[in-house]
Image (cartoon, rainbow, N blue to C red; front, side, top):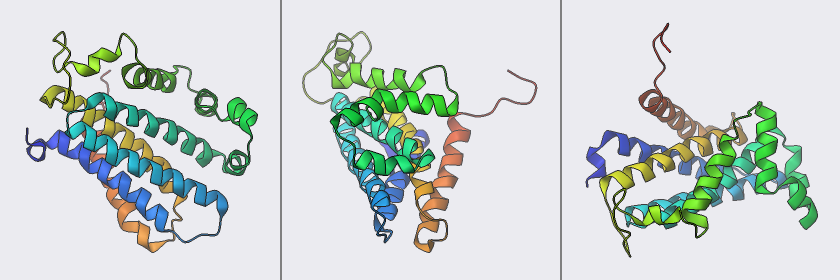
Length: 221
């Protein structure tokens, strides 16, 4: 299939590229702040994970691609925690195993974000669990990722079918939105070299949201 001719898939890839660009720009910001250096490294982690996840997806290895998507999800949650409470970065840097487990484990980070934003639906936990069941752990649900068609036979090796690939790129694009949103605020607004990347991401994000999450007309539900 030719992704370049599919506007939706092309937009997902554009968002991924722009989120990766923000991570790269953040990496280049000169700083002696050790806390910010931590954020830079985490941004670099998302860059590498996006590149690897895309490469695997486009090569037909959807399950392995999804495993890396879970890594991005976990990293973006941690970055979001730090964005709202910068003092936690230093605490995380020097935390021992017990402190990491009790305050910064994936579940503790998700719970802290849910409490901060007043979310009660546990959507973060549900998505993390889904990625875990589909890709990170051998479960009865994980064989879904080995089937080119719903209800069809599982196959060994890669496969590239339009529907599974479209779903995969859609989820990667959704992650790119989150990564760009959390990385952007860490880049000082006055730093000129970041302005082009930041503006391009904001414009593409707006287009993405309008296309995939259009607002209902006034008066409709």
